[in-house]
Image 1: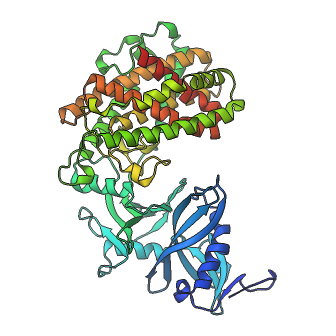
Image 2: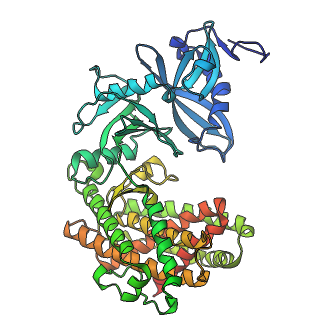
Image 3: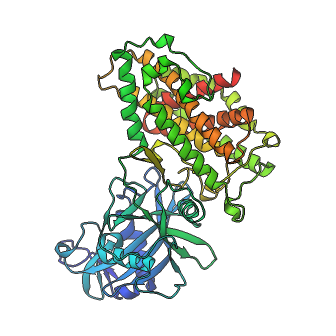
Length: 548
């Protein structure tokens, strides 16, 4: 292999003596591919999660070959090693298309290359329709194929085989790449991958095939890679495409904008709005008229429906008594140690982040950050104060990263999606059974964010003072939580999902809410310092609530 020195000569920069069909049998190609070709390409991709770290080197750790009548494709697993002494694994399907750039069906080129005197381009195979057809047909079973030793294609028994009609990219994504097939199905290719079955694949398949819960995109099929050591890697997940009107985050922002405009329109006296304790269950038919006058009824009806769907999800996830991955389990000392170690590590990280970013804060955010540092001992003790012997409820597999952005709105209903889990967590941690109230706490933090986002993004449509809007928002937040709790607790208890009784529920909510708010601090300080006030206010409120 020799590398061209003169870019103006009409040949590829990268020239190899072997053919494309034997490319990954050639160590010289693998070396050049990982050290020179990939590095330049990957750094520019939206799905690359290592932009804030220093790339040290890339290693090809495994590959598999797939062939259609026209082309040979490789699925390539790479490991990116960073100077900060950690690594990430990625999956890239690669094709070689001979000919000039002008004749390609895509502009997404990895690099111009020459194999055995044949000039062409390395392409991310997802941008080649022939590859998209190939994997679709393998999942659907057209043609019938014998079991492949390495690549495991699967179609659910709940899905009848379909013929390929069309495919195209779903826009607006970051960490994965999704292909829409036949305008009815969506195949999510996981770019960053883990040496284990992806939780999104596990949970989607379980809920579709072993439960009656239908408010998710149904599992259709998948592609997994079987490694020689017995591990399985999920490469892609195919599901039904849910027709929707957008996500619940966007929906809630529109609803809240209308709610807050009532403060001026109806001349609401904020100081006279009746308050309720945090977590107090609130039947919709007993919400005070002053609150209905301020917020209307629709927002509470929607919160109640979302609570019902959340409860049904948890009931389904805790319903299996055979599959040990989904059997409810009690609290024990191992879980308590795992939880405390994880949270203390995160808490220390956030303390360091605050101390290094105090100069970015001002006003109330700065005061609350100082209060956070002053109360670090109290918060640390709160995380250490998890006495598992007092827990009478059960742990189950949960969503793990539950918020309004993970919910689709369709007419008057909600569909829950993306069960991959918390981005900062390891793949093993994402599969640990947790209190279902952790998901509930995640949604409550999302409500809080939606309220504050509406206030912060005031485009001049609100003439009410920010202080009054904050006060009204905190009251509204408690009623939204109250309505959610009334529907959620009633439903899960009627189906015998053990989440504990009042005292344990409130302890777990306090615990999980504080965990989520501290988790949020890191993101806001690094990305949106002005918004740091949202988790800081949440933390302050939770600490005050604990003392009441």
